[in-house]
Amino acid sequence: MKEQRGVLFSRGTRSYKLYVILSAAAFIMHTGYADTTQPRILTLTYTCHITNIPSGVKQVNCWIPVPSSDERQTVALLSGSGSGKITTERKYGNQVYYSQVMMNKANVKDSLTITLRYKIKLKEKSVPEARTLTGLPKADIGGKMKVYLASNRLIPLDGPVETIHQQLQLEKEPIKAARQIYDYLIDNMIYNYKAPGAGIGDVLWACNSKTGDCSDYHSVFIALCRSEGIPADHVFGLPLSATPGKGKVKDWHCWARFYVQGPGWITIDASEADKHPELRDYLFGTLSNRYLTISHGRDVVLEPAQQGPALNIFADPYVEIDGKPFTKVKWEGTFETVSQD
Image (tube, rainbow, N blue to C red; front, side):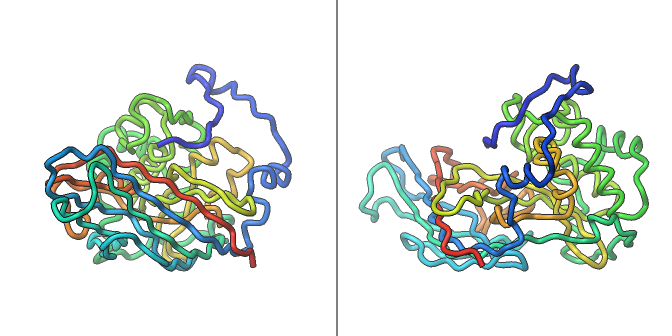
């Protein structure tokens, strides 16, 4: 994935980073965080293009992540093209728009387009306990929450993660421990989404290279939280700029969240804070109304289940042609602000 370009520094000059320091208020206004406390109502059109389908194909299956309503966002699907249906995968509860096309019956040649239209209300969620580093206990976890303490294929809890975990000597209270991990990532990693190997959330690669994009920063955060017995999760969403009127989105962004007794899930965005140091405190415990959450979790088995392996990340449409993964898939989104309460 691509993200907004940040300033890149060589590892050897990390200690000599120079930032043009603006006042927090001026910087927040410039970057579109000026009034994130106000709810926003938008329409979103999400279009998936499946192109260059080989001749002779019998069946095309497509799964698209569908945003769900929660305490921060209200989502209504207005329309969906084709004969698709909404399903829910079992591991994390992600919603999915599933479409199956039998090519011998469809009036198409070498391409398919699926369009989804939504009406969305977004608001900021901020957890005061994160700002004050309140000393709360770890949550008593059981049942479905255990998945947020286990390793994933690219989020192991041993090797370099175990070494870093021992070096950090984390606080026993989970919010304070999470802040230590957050600060460690910002102080020791270098944001570079173009680095070979970046963008898939491979913890071993990220620990060794100390660079990457949002998926890499937050995979390490999740691994270190889980090593400390703090449930943590990987969340994916669409950046919808706060500029009034119409806008476009072509790439997803991701962040992490950890679970604490009392306030529940607390969001952090270490990669964005590394690019924008004036937002460092704000992005520990706050998720603004600029982002639409579309999915979460790693190693996802869809519904109905795909024939290929579990998905490392389910933030883009996933397509199989005659039971085999197909990569010639693109998506784009356009959105328009309806009102700002």
